Image 1 (cartoon, rainbow, N blue to C red):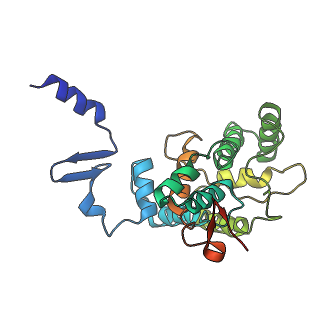
Image 2 (image 1 turned 30 degrees about the vertical axis):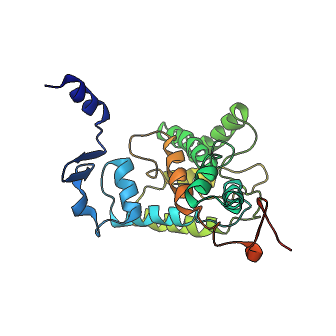
Image 3 (image 1 turned 60 degrees about the vertical axis):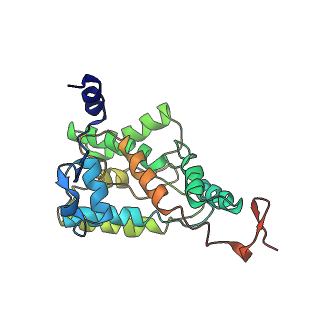
Length: 248
């Protein structure tokens, strides 16, 4: 027996993907069983959580992914992707350039919001009223992390036009017992100091099962990698000028 090869195969083996000659399996499901039967959002759910979603769960995740479609260069990652394309590089290079700026400052609010809501939910589960739990979570965040609350307000929109519709979608999913709605309740009891609360929260079952809030960044990366693709076709005046749009 080739001990080195056996050890190498064991090192690369995961519970997510199994591949050998003639066989491809994701979380135990053969690829031929999934093709044409599972949506992109459903596949994301399977890969991250380990089980196939219900129709309602897949629809809710697909809705969240759809809401992050490229919506203009006000977002730094989109601006970078467009600038990169204007330099004559390929689509993959442009997307890589955009993804590389994602972190706590840009693209991190969703993950940070999950952490904030999870703290409030945990206090509720320990017996604290939701209003008290939300207030304590805000006090903790502003004391430990800073005065800006993640998931509240938008630097460009007075009210994010996606927020009301996404919250309606979550409410409908709660009514159908697709999700339990605890994160949404925590979000509605959190209030930014100005009283303005505009950005919708992911629900409790959105992060991968058994994971902590760090899973939120993974979902964000999927969204950014999937949809930061408009640069090659969305060109003002259709001309390039040394790396910047020539708008003359």
